[in-house]
Image (cartoon, rainbow, N blue to C red; front, side, top):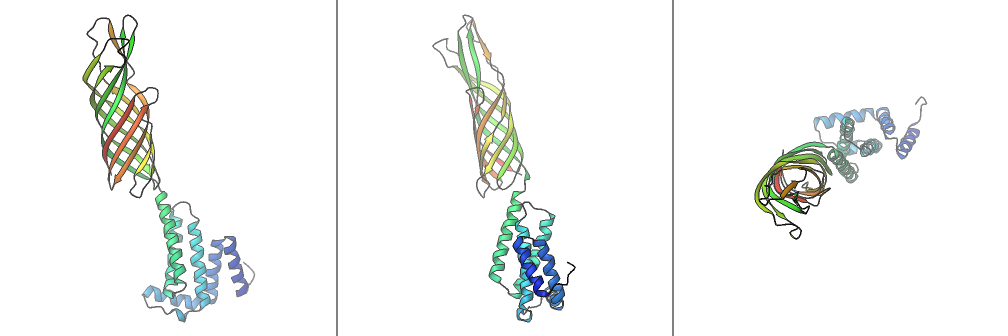
Length: 303
């Protein structure tokens, strides 16, 4: 500004800048007012605070305290306008903290200063919570999964076979999460055994086997919403499962077993109940193109 404004005109301009939301410009103007009209008092106060001296607020003019208040609130409004954390946020927060300390030492509008401090602390915590952080964990689940097969006779009759397996799935998880959302990819190695039976005995002879070894892998992407301060969560997964299991050819002549593809895709719901680094986890899923189901229950630990 080239014009030599009066003190009252500068104060009116400062008020207008704040009303219009031009807080950076208002900060520059208030610093100009402090240096122009209260340079000695400002330097004396800064040195006293630096030395840790007891401050007598009555020694300093009310108008100077108001200028400090304007600087304090303008930095606060700037901080509340940030949508993500950055080095600039830290820089502005340092200036905000300086004027907060000055006002506290001067015992000026203490209740309002405390309220503004709480608001800025809450907003800064919100910005910190929004940041996505890399997370890893391992887990072991007790699981049950199903597979399809078909029993055929040389007469053309067919019957569906359901193989129900139980076993364990051990693996890990990689992902990113903030205070609200968790996106990840998990995978595990399956090992177990199951039994098979004819689910349509009216159309074809009975067929049963038990303790058939099965092994494979399961993995896929997932997303969840964090629903508590302990970081418990619920969400969905879209995993694939590849399971190898060989059925015995029926003893009766004229019968054969046609096994479906070992690769299948699922959609599942899952939940995690967090206890510090440890957690309990459940999963309930259904194959996308088949009628079979999958469920799991287990424990895990974050790193």
